[in-house]
Length: 107
Length: 121
Image (cartoon, rainbow over all chains, first blue to last red; front, side):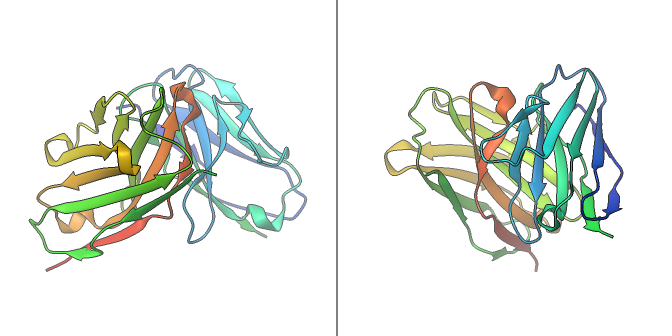
């Protein structure tokens, strides 16, 4: 199985800040990388697919980048509603695998 | 509008079989490229993909649980099902169904609210 390593495990930031979350795959996944946001008590919601494509309805302050084994999710101008856990997931090989998550809190 | 909703027993005893139903609307599993998958989330193991069933009845399972899983669908009633045999306390988790469609790199674009399943004697 392809291992997905996310960092940091938790992150504290202030309103208006820019935050970046990293995801490292154990092998090349050729941009087959999705990012999900999970708000407290809710199910995960797709934010970004194919490494850098924004899902419908997702605010433009979210962006994704990366290639090969290294990927990142960037949130510009942090809002209070962005407090969530963020997961990466590879769709290149079966079984699809997820990162352990990054918990984002407000400072 | 795409919606999915899981249903299941809530609690069951070790060694029993878990039967889950995913009822969905806004798409059809008879449409080319459509898929419903099952994913579970526990505090110990995070998010774990379990199985996918595609519009053409192709089925894929997580090898770590393959012998215990059976996925199926009822296209006429817009439902998908997952059975897990020989449940253990380690299978206690929230179980989600989610939609996926080709091309596969899009990931799971709609998720149900999840159903909590507790395995306890």
